[in-house]
Image (cartoon, rainbow, N blue to C red; front, side, top):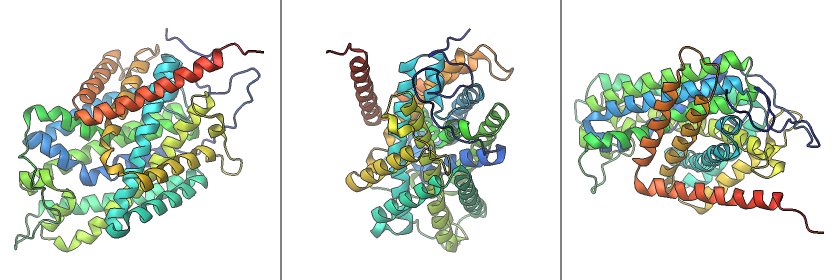
Length: 445
């Protein structure tokens, strides 16, 4: 039997324990299967789909589709584990909650801290990417404006978030269909030049051993289904809705990514694909539909906004869960009465993203987010392994495979990314250790 911590029962919400602690105001269940799937797929088809193929192709070379398949297989293991746990614990916070309930406070904290810090940097990167696609000369002001507007949408309630996500997802899917058709119809008759030239320092695509680090980069693009789990407290009939939404979103994203990888390799020369800063733009520019480049730029901007919207939502809910357990300051657990959203957590996340945009070149620190996400899902698989009741499609060996896959991909990422995120995790662990010691120390009269 799995060990439960803190005297909770399955399905309890963190912070709602009997005793002197004041109960927290709960969020409302308003999302069905369609909205939940749209939020997950919108996260997976964010800005990553417009940029991730190039660095992955530089590492994997002609084996790019194999790297996508490896990333998709590990993502499937993680999705099954997330679905099991989210159905058991339908509360905000995702693996932070699951780790605490099944493994203990420290594994839960490591998962939550890695998610919050890594995804906050990702929010800033998504916002800045949006600014660069719309107006490069005003990228930072536009990025800040995007964060402010989308945070305002989130504060209006989760149904508004889901509605805007559906609109943005429709634009992104239309853009990807256009790119696929342009690639299938073959090259431009006049040999149109690329929109983004390969850097002079770029070596030829490697392949072979580059498949694993390429899969690690591609895995980052698949990780959006975590947003469905972090919204567990706002999903109707979570035991039925969450597993269906997670697996549906992952299946759709896998088909899209695998298809695009094959098309891009067929349509663009290997050196150009590996060095492009905008591979989907280059694919259209080199096709008979080269006049559609502005449409792809608009689709990329919509993808950035959709991913940013879902990211802010997910990070805010994990922050809420950590504040309920006092792993982050308690005021972050406050929930508004009018729209039942964690407004303090949402505003804090937005403030942190704006500070990053104004003070840091966030594009240089995006890599460490992949390491944090892989550690997050390693904890997910470990927590799912301890569950007693299991459906037929979720054997324990799948959790073992997912855990080992996450660890292998994490340690094969570029060393700078791995070391930076390891330092962030260590700082968080040290800070929590000191806070716990102070709380447990006997007060001096």
